[in-house]
Length: 285
Image: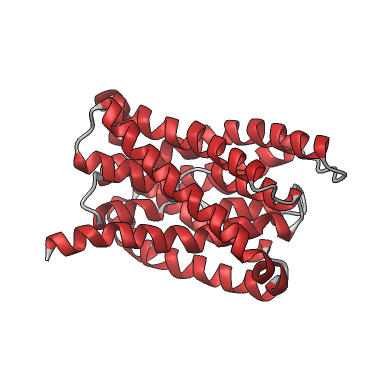
C-alpha cells in the first residue's frame, strides 16, 4: 500500500482545519504583535533548518536521512501546536497566526532550502538526489494552500458549521498521525529500528535546541510567559505529515527512507512537548 494515499487525506484535513481557524484577526496580529511574530518566524524559517543542517552534517547522516532531517525542519508548524499552546496556557491566537504564516511562507522557502541541501548532499557523496522544484511547489499548493483556503471560505460562509466541525477535526489530528506512523513502521521496520538510536538522538537534540532558541528569541523581543510558551511550542512542533508527503510523493523524492526522520520527529516532538506542557498542568491543579 502506498503511504502517499494515507498521508494526503490527513494533510488535507489538517490544512482545512487550519483554514477554519484563520481569520482577518489572525493576520492583524502581525501588526499588533510584530516582535512575537518576528521571533516565531525567525525560529521556524531560519533557526530550525539551520540547526537541522548542522546536526545532520555533524552526525554524518546518510544522504536520505540528511535530507529528511532538514526537510522536516523546513516544514511549517503543525496544527496540533494550537492545541498544545492552549494546554500550556499560552497565546492560542498567536499560535494560530504563526502556524498560518509559516504555512504560507514555507511554500516558497522550502523549495529554496531543499534545493541547496540536495545539491550539497550530492556534491560530497556518490548519491545524486534531484529535487523537482516546480512539482514540489505544485504539490504544496494543492495539498496545503488550497485546503487552507477552502477552510477559510467554509468558516466565513458557514461559521456555525465550522464551529462544530473544528473540534471534531482537532480530536482526529493526533490519532491520524499515529496511524500514519504505525503504517509507515510496518512498511520500513528494519530501517526505522536500525537507525532509531542515531536519528532519535539527532531529532531529540534538534527539538530541544530549537525550543531553547524559541525561549531566547522571546526574551529578546520582550514577550511575556504566554508568548514564550507559544513560540517554544510552535518551533518545536512541525508539520510531519507534509514532510512525509514530500518524501514519499512519486512526483518528488519517492523515497520512504527520507520520511523516516519525520516519523521519528513526530513521535519525539509529542513526547517532549507533552512533558513540557505537563509542567503547566501541575501548576494549574
